[in-house]
Length: 200
Image (cartoon, rainbow, N blue to C red; front, side, top):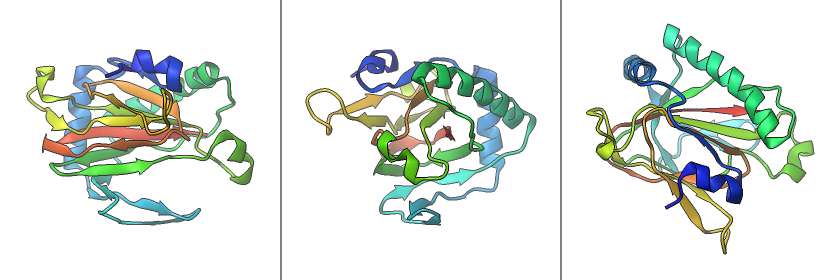
């Protein structure tokens, strides 16, 4: 199993442990659970979305609390770092989505954006995907933890079907090119809480 730092060479995946501190993660988890949760949707074509629990099953919300304001400030600073790291221009920023995966929830293999050669065909393509884990696996020592729910990124190695699992830990940020295929494995116990955003 590769750590995020080992994935950088192979796939362009960047990992920053403890990007969010323990207290911010705790406040955000409380905000998510208190928020107005609805089924997460999947994209159908360029603009339409729909609920498809055979492909993606989780709950999502957006929050507007002081903690969420801190998140947006941090992500805007990260956007500048990602532009330098990947050597691309990034000017767009999607407000973060907060996701709650309960036991059995998952997100099948997908990509968030097109290959770089296809950027010209879309008005505002997602170029960099960002995930921040707000809690971690059971053996992390935290009471508010879960089992399963690994983020798996595909590509590199000997085959495009080679999967590289990233074990969730509280506060870990993972950034990667949006054209990379990835999935969230089913949660086997507890609640997996994370946020996602995209730079374009």
